[in-house]
Picture 1 (tube, rainbow, N blue to C red):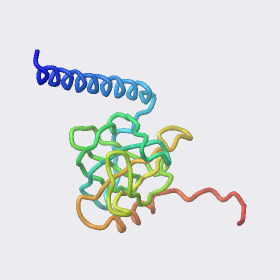
Picture 2 (picture 1 turned 30 degrees about the vertical axis):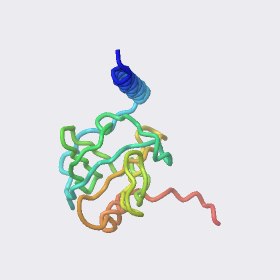
Picture 3 (picture 1 turned 30 degrees about the horizontal axis):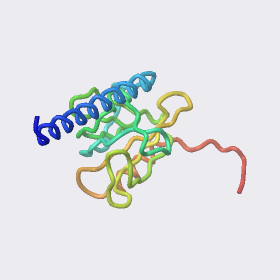
Length: 170
């Protein structure tokens, strides 16, 4: 066996090892996150006020933009549509059932620049903070296909329930 053949064999073995490690890591992540599911289906009689083409980027642990959650069906990036309704946000992603984030699940909506898999111009991502279950907030990141996200963010913020008044003053 020549030195070149040996180098090719080592390169192939290392590549296969890396792919195998990636496969095991993803399977472990999906098992870890299997307790979480995104809410599916749009309620009857929800009135759509706007639609926007979006690129769904990721869902991460709250305030940890580099820690992806493998939440079905939000585990992978996808193109799709965001439909803003009077009752919440519908994410209609290509090849996946419609995810519906009702207004009572929403915590905050703002801009972001970085998340796992994506770095964009300052404030180029829309971050939607929502409760995946009681008391567990997560961050979902979207990128508008066209236009400035400011009007969308303003419309989305109208859905977020006001924080309860605790009587505290600063």
